[in-house]
Amino acid sequence: MTFKMVVENPGFLTTVQDLGRYGYQQFGMPVAGAMDDYALQAANLLVGNPRGEAGLEITYSGFSTRFEGRGRVAVTGADLGAKLNGRPLEPWQSVVVEDGDMIVFTAVKKGCRAYMALEGGVSVPEVMGSKSTYIKAEIGGYNGRKLVKGDVLESGDKGHINFEGSIRVPDEFLPQYSGDVNVRLVMGPQDDCFPPEEIEKFLNSKYAVTNQCDRMGYRLEGPAIKHSSGPDIISDGIALGAIQVPGHGRPIIMMRDRQTTGGYTKIANVISVDIPLLAQLKPGDRVSFTRVSVEEAQALFREREELLKRLEDYLRSKDKFFNYCVKIRDREFRISVQRLL
Image (cartoon, rainbow, N blue to C red; front, side, top):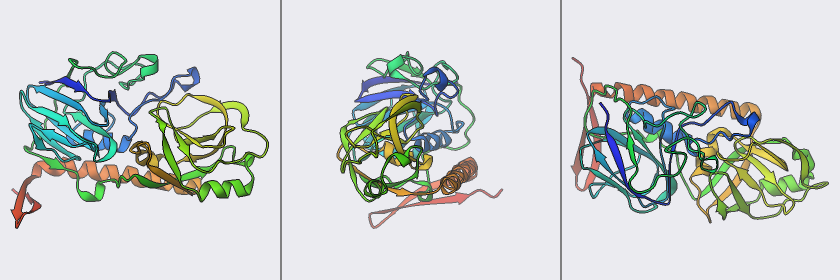
């Protein structure tokens, strides 16, 4: 069984994204994929999908969709004021939608990118092993483009989820989005192209995200970083989170739709687990940096994988629980009762 969603309003930018297209950077093809990959994985787990299934990446507010048929959907990531049939729908939870139900994203409250997963996934063809949309090359996703009014997306075959009602990700698994973040990075690969005092300036400054920020990269405004002997290098590969410093000295953080090679010096690389925090920054938000070692970055990545596995185990056990919401003196309390027999 499948169900459909009809796009009533595409909003600012809504695309189909999974965890990305790997194995083709040598041919100049970017990885693409969800900017906030943690939120996408959590959304998929909430509807019983594999973590890497494709969902919708909804940037800013305005997106609205109507459902045809019955199925489970989940919204995670930024709080964009989602409402189901006019009633608030909290992020990081799944709900069952019925034929004719509407979900509308009304306002940007915290972060800027939300993710919607459909039970059974999004039924679009894979291109080079991925369903992710790469708009510049017009490949992947829904006809290689952002969604427009009237598009109809169908879910894949639904699995068997033995629970009803809403299910929410527990607080311990929720990321802390903010408009003023400190992210961790590993220095290199060309940090030797900067004098030590310039590196210290970079690490002890706070930068603002400019209007020139998109899925390709974030240009930052703040103290300029001077090179020892010029900004140019022989072009080499660019990793997710690489921080280029062109001749004007203002850093650029490379994101999911980045080019695969570049000829500017790279002073450092934001670690993988902190990319989702960057993905939720808007123009005017601020970012600062803390240096960590490669070994620390690897340990943090392992910790996040263990966190996602614990979340998966928790959600798979939900068919053994009955969930209730109790209101006492205008305060809501969520309780779960486990079925033992």
